[in-house]
Length: 213
Image 1 (cartoon, rainbow, N blue to C red):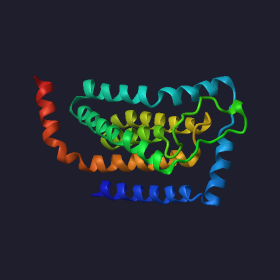
Image 2: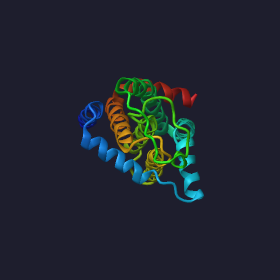
Image 3: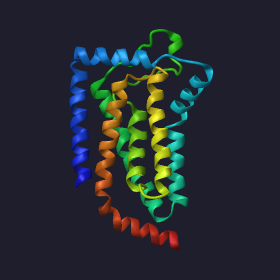
């Protein structure tokens, strides 16, 4: 029940934020742009490249690899976690696209062209698709691997997700509230999926039997 409640609260938070952005609330958009200009200030080449790498590879490459590794080498709990990750991603990819199209927020324009480290995508800005996926993945892994040594793996992936999210603002592709919106939806959907995972036990049992054979 706690996961369902958490999911509903996160969705409510997203709905409020989306309304404020849709109706162009002056204080919210002013704060958002100011925060964007503070974060979107490239530093030295090494930091810039690290942020570029996180924004380019931290979503698809890291989370596809994580899901595959959990399924193949993670044992029973790893397989079940991998299935939940796949379900979350299948839901969130079209959902994120639909939300972007509906809200239709323009991408940010950095103060100078040098501040745009990665060419901006052509789709709308809110919510961040990267934040959707990596926050969902981090939430599910942390919910399933939160004891003893397993939590180390979870914390590493949570840190990776946070760096990906930060990188999207740093490289000039998203406003801070874009990534906040992505986090709210991504973790909200993941919370519901984790809460409903008990209903997938018959499928999990069949997977376990297949692996034993």
